[in-house]
Amino acid sequence: QVQLVDSGGGLVQAGGSLRLSCATSGITTSLYDMGWYRQAPGKQREFVAVVTPGGSTNYADSVKGRFTISRDNAKNTMYLQMNALQPEDTAVYYCNAKWIREVWGQGTLVTVSS
Image (cartoon, rainbow, N blue to C red; front, side, top):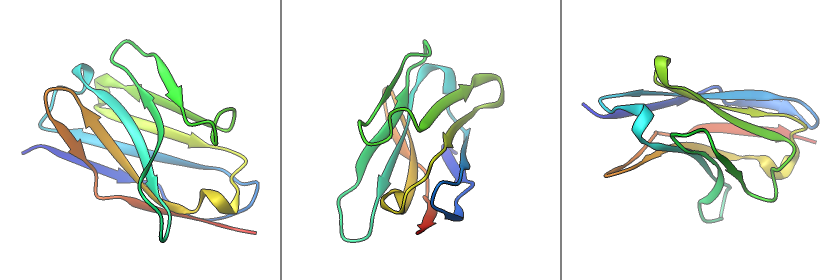
């Protein structure tokens, strides 16, 4: 069964940090582009960051310099280190795996208080 399980969300004050994790099963993680998206209340889901099988990364302008995406293929896990969090980062964060198929995690809520 193909499954992505994202975790690590929570409540944090502005300026704080969180690390999200995405554990995969049922896919060969090393073959997939692995990414994070987020959806704030009343807004559309938006791209946050992606890491390719080769380790190349790309970030949304809004998180560059604050967020770092990484992957550990041996552990079938992807991470998103989020630093200097701001209230506008409040959203449900979803992990995503994309190759010959696209798979989504269930989402983990990040709330940043001012």
